Length: 205
Image (cartoon, rainbow, N blue to C red; front, side, top):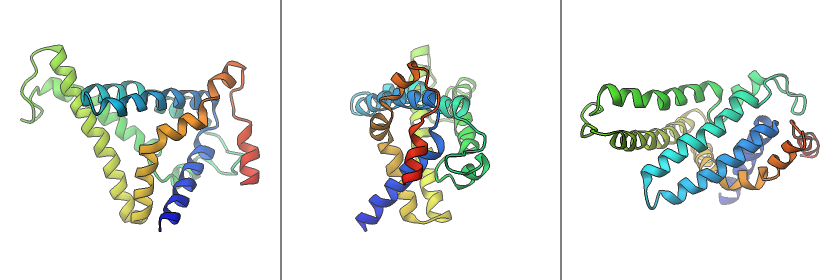
């Protein structure tokens, strides 16, 4: 059972890399995202509010900017797949689902501003510092909620193992991304916009 779990984890991680990380800019942004996520992980034990602020304002924005603005969306000749096909088979959050998640994240400060108690959940904020700390708490809940929602969703549309594997992948992505993409910034500075190694790896996979 553990062997199957680890194999499925490797498969999901490999599919994510080969389908969605062709751009060296995207890879470089993922490297920055991974480093800041690890800092956010450490800060969870000392100040969860700071962890949430770093996780969303740095880690998530750099990570998703790479996907939305720099990753090619044309026909994927390396994997012989259309962008639409890749979006359809995506295990986790495809671009459409990410738009929903990022919209919830971006609108949550406005909701708190309009209703300082957030429907009675908070003591009304009285300063900008109070406001940011309460926003950070909302963002922490959005992050945890987004992770759990898709995990449970996968339980029903796939199976329990797929959901648990995906959750494990998401939580451990910062560690694997550092290993995968630490060379990307240097390659980018050399003018390499697309990872040339993907085609070779896919052909031998």
